[in-house]
Image 1: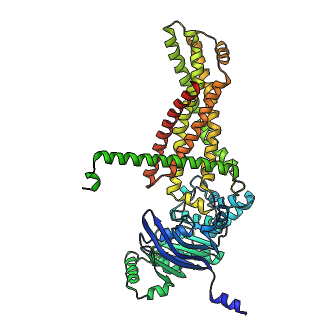
Image 2 (image 1 turned 90 degrees about the vertical axis):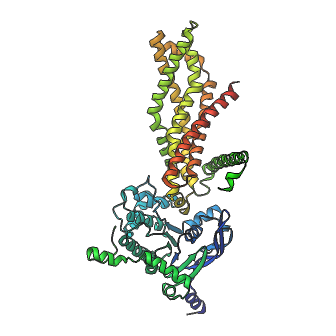
Amino acid sequence: MDDSDTAGAQAPRNVIEVRDLVTHYGDRMILKGVSMDVRADEIMVIMGGSGSGKSTLLRHLMALEHHSSGTMRILDQDIEKLSGVELVELRQKLGVAFQGGALFSSMTVGENVMLPLYEHTGLDRKTMEIMARMKLEVVSLGGFENLMPSELSGGMIKRAAFARAVVMDPKILFCDEPSAGLDPVVSSALDDLILNLRDALGMTVVVVTHELESAFKIADRITVLDRGEILFIGTPDELRADPSQRIQNLLNRVAEDDTLDADAYLNRLTGETPAYRPL
Amino acid sequence: MTPTDTRNPIVALTERVGRAVVAGVEEIGLGAMMVVESVYWLILGRREKQAVRLGAIAEQCMAVGIQAVPIIALLAATIGMMLAIQGIHTLRIFGAESRVTIGISFSVVREFAPLITGIVIAGRSGSALAARIGTMKINQEVDALYVMGINPVRFLVVPALVAMLIMVPALTLFSDFVGLFFAGVYVNLDLGISLAAYMDETIELLRVDDLMHGLGKSVIFSVLIAVIGVVNGASVQGGAEGVGKATTRAVVQSISAIIVTDMLFAFVVTR
């Protein structure tokens, strides 16, 4: 093994690099000099309470907002310096599963999943249908492609959103509050889905959540935001062991609201372990 | 008591009016930007690897135009007959009811056909456009388009705008024929003038300029309806209630804009 190989093994490549990011909404400063990296193939969970700025940070990572100062590089490209066409090309390498799914209500599930292919590839319809069906199979929604979003449950909508987010085989998958509004069983199954997608499709995943249990289950590393500042970046074990009073207060506060364990909950209901299942 | 309450009422009123004017100017600016951006995507979309889809335009043409045919036909027929009734009633005072065709022809083609078509499309399609874009905005579907690398103006606005530009003039023309025909039917029943004679006189009276007067207005109406619908949809805030407010606002603004524009157009072109 030569030196470069050794260096590569020691320092994982960053797919996202944020430096001193400052953003404002009107006169109010939302992010106050945030710096963080996301490494290739890891699951990075961004946590924080309401108003911590985690959703704003995610919108910046998705290149949906302009920042006031600082730099942000995604897949080695400074997004503030990209032209319109370059930004479109970059976005094709990003997948996003929105909090509410954001499926287009006038399209079937299959058409929703096919839309990025239809817009960005020259593939014929048959091929696109096959690819969409494959992604729907990955999220356990095979056979649901002809249904309208209004005919799906909350969990199924999120799964369909995941299928659409990964249909172009993105390098980075962003998930905004994947468990929000779901019961613990469905929420746990979605956590499994995120882990499976990362392993099966080999992508970096950035998850924004306020659910502690979900964060500890899926995260390789966790970033904790509080009032627009980064409080902590590290592994779940490091977070648990961190002696900082602010962090312990945060964990205790979340834990008080989130004591239900999904596996135990399902076991009580059905006597089963929540395996990877269609919702 | 807040500081605002202690201010001079005239100052407070001036400030409110000023804010409303600024908001209005901002909306007009946003509307103008939408039009410019739409033209850009229509012409240069292919170069930007985001061509406007003909299928999307056809879909919108169907929704804006074809599905509106029955209601336009009904209202155009009603207006045509109403003009005939009122025209005959008025001219009978002078014993000149046989000259009613003049009033009907010009009124329908230059005024009522574009106006009624514009109002119906504003109520049907302008509101639907505002509701659709507003709902998509609050459901993060517009954000989803951005992150998928799909420009929302190209994807949502251009097909609607082009469909309006095609279908509103087409429906106005249709409305011309229906209005004139049913007015002729009433004239035939009331005055005994044959439909053929009525049509001959109508064709003889009307010039291409008269048709173009109505069609020109309908083109302006179509842009107004689309832009007002999009701007109101894009400014939705506050969930479902916000969508309802934006939809109502879009209809009221569109119809007001159509009527005011109609008067200005008539003033400028007719004098």
